[in-house]
Structure formats: C-alpha cells, structure tokens
Image 1 (cartoon, one colour):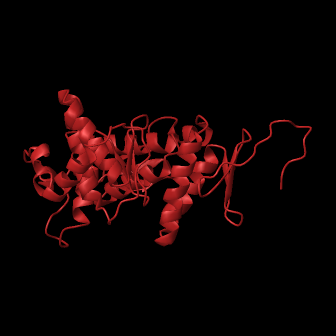
Image 2 (cartoon, rainbow, N blue to C red; image 1 turned 90 degrees about the vertical axis):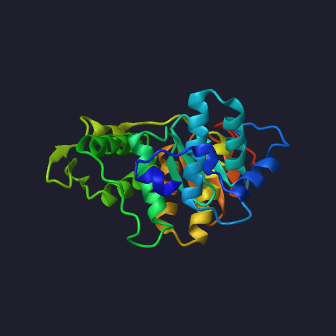
Image 3 (cartoon, helix red, strand yellow; image 1 turned 30 degrees about the horizontal axis):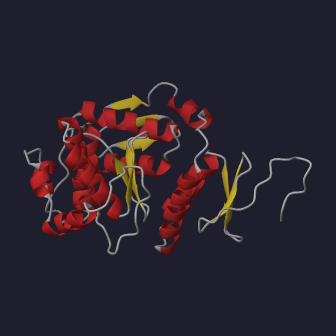
Length: 274
C-alpha cells in the first residue's frame, strides 16, 4: 500500500491496515478515546512508515467525517507512542520521530511518506516519486514555516525529504537550488521570523513529553535530534539541567525529568530553593 501511495496510485487507506494493527485497535477501542491523551510507551519498535499510514487514515477519516475511524486511529497511534499536534500539523513519537499531519494527497504528506518508505524497503527498489518544481517549492515553504515556529525536528525531516528529491538548501544565503538548476530564495522574511518568533509557553505536559522524547533520542545515541529538542525547549523558555535532571521555565515553573512536580515560588522576596 505504501509503495502504491508513493507511486501516486490509488489506495484505500482503511484497507491498508495490517492485521496486527487492527488487533491492537480492537483492544484499544474498549477504553474512551481522547485525542489529547498522553501517548503510551509502545511494547515494540514502531516503523515510521506504519505511523505515516495511520496518520493518513486519520486525516482521511477526518475529511470524510468518519468520527469513529478518526478516533480509532488516534487511539491506535497513542498506543504506539505517537501524539498528534493539530496546532502545528505534526506528529511526534516517544522515540523522537516526527512527521506531518496532513491530507494524504498533500505534497508534504507524500514527501514524508516517500522518505518513510525508502527506510524500510531494499535499497534502490523504490525510488522517490519525482515532484514538480511547484511541489518542491511548497516543501521549502513548509520547512520555513516549521523553522519559524521553532519546530526544528520537523524542519529537519523536511530537509531530508528535499535532499531525497535532489534539492540543495543554502540556509546561510536563504536560497535553494532545484534538481533542474532553478534557483530561488526562501519566503520573504523567513530568516527574520526564525530569529524573532516567540512561542506560547508550553504546558507541563508538553515539557515532560518533549523531555521524554529527548531522553529516548539520547539512549539511541541520536544526539542530533536530542540537541534539536533541547534547542526547541530553550526557544520556548525551558531550561534543562542534565546533571540534576530537572527543568525550569522562564515563568517560574520547575519539575524533574521523570515528571515529578517541584515546589515553585513566585515571590521575589523568598530565597530560591537549591
């Protein structure tokens, strides 16, 4: 099914669900399904391609108004350790993977699906489906939006997709070169937006989930992603102390990497706790 989607051939996403995934869904359906619940720690390694197919099913169900399938796929994604962030149109797994939450027909979804498929099939057996210049420039725009929102893990994912399509990016010069030699500049003001954007302060749950993703990346020695997550938290006013394994925010909140809350004081006259 993934190969047909990558090649631009029609495929029924609900029918593409493997039997094992359907069995997991049957178990999950016995509990109330709440899209914003914290994702679980999966009992097995989950392939990015599996996540992308499920996200495609979820978004197809949303577009068709099929609330049951939408909630079921959201519950199954949570059981696999995947959280959907509709506000930023991205998904994130507990082991640090990221990807788009978008229509399966969209350029950004097809590019991410192509990259995910290439990671699980024999080398050279499936070539990335070629994209038009307009589609590639759309991907460049999506990447700049992600950078402006300081969603650096997703921006890196889109950079990977663009490289697979033969696009050369020059962040220092705010420019890109397409496979046919066409050159262009990043969307106007994008570089300034990356430097100046300020994000809304994250909730404690968001902080703890992101720290958990970073810890998983460190255990897997994926230090590039771990650093990107640390940079993302810092951009939103969250500082990490790896030695003490505690986090603190610019608005005075504190907590441990394990999710335990810590006493917080907003009174400037009180001595800070050490």
